[in-house]
Image (cartoon, rainbow, N blue to C red):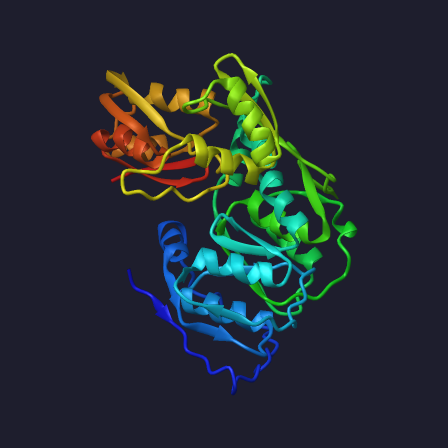
Amino acid sequence: MQAIVFSICSMCVADPGVSVELDRPIPKLVVEQEFDAALETRILNAAWERVSLRTILRDVARTKQVSIILDRRIDPDQQPSIRLSGQTLRESIDLIAKRVNAASSVIGNCIYMGPVEGVNKLATLIEVRNDEIFGESTQPTSAALDKRKFELSKQKTVHWNDLDQPADLTQRIANQFGLRVTGVDQIPHDLWRGGTLPMMSAVESLSIVLIQFDKTFLWSPTGISIVSAPARITIERLYTPRGQSPGQAAAEWKTRFNVQAAPRGTQVVVVGSAEQHAEILDLVQPATASGTKPRRRLTKPPRIEFTLSQEQVPVIAVLQNLEKKGGFKFVYDKNALESAGVNLAAKVDINVVKASPAEFLKAVLDPIGVAFDLDGKTVTLRAK
């Protein structure tokens, strides 16, 4: 594993300060697997003296090509004495956060550092919002609502410059995801340092901005409204204990993790924060064969998948079913397709397992010589 080596002489370090950038280019940042790998790389022989927290985080972020967001409530000009020797990036950020009486959390493809209370709320708020938007519902849904949820499940990069205002940034994020937003006037005037949230969901991006004012948002089919974050927020989940009875596990977890826990049949029902649930999940799910534990990821919006094995099904029947039940819309020139020899009534064999929408459509349309462009749930067909 390659390590990044810093060597800074504590007797001759002077903080160069940070100039204002009004047209900052979008930096190249690692995401997904590369981001996970960066969290586990080690920093050897790194030291900062008489250097601002802002500069320390900037140095680490640029070297590792990761996004680090510092909450506005943490003084960026304080100068903690930091020495690292072999810690992973994740451990290093935790150490730096503790030195400034803060905490940190991995959210999507970025590291967020903020007040302990804010960090504890953030992960839980994100999971609750995701459950509200993408969780199972007993209420009937419309094609328009399904399309809206599909758009919100996408990951997009949010980038802003020095001196941008958070209220404007909130509106910009909402616009990126096609959301109407009310209550932006609740966000106080402020001027921020530039930042980048690489490939993040709408819930993640909005939550990281709003938590810095102790705000969150409420979701409705017509948009979102900015509201104050609750003083305490929890999630309820069920776990199957390992090597203990449900009663024994519940009693231990109450004390060990400071959660509400009670036996329910062969399982334990736990009420706590997202971070507390992550600790319990680490306990009940053993390490992988390599001896390492998977990265704690927040709940992601569900990926739309198709599994189907059927012979000689008319293509037009598949398309109509996708429109009726899946909220898809197919756009094509029937005469042009027929002139090119395409017959949508032709029958094809389909055999896919956990295919993405693009993979599924390719399996259906390729055999009859049809290409397509996919934009959300709008599919434009054309002859090859």
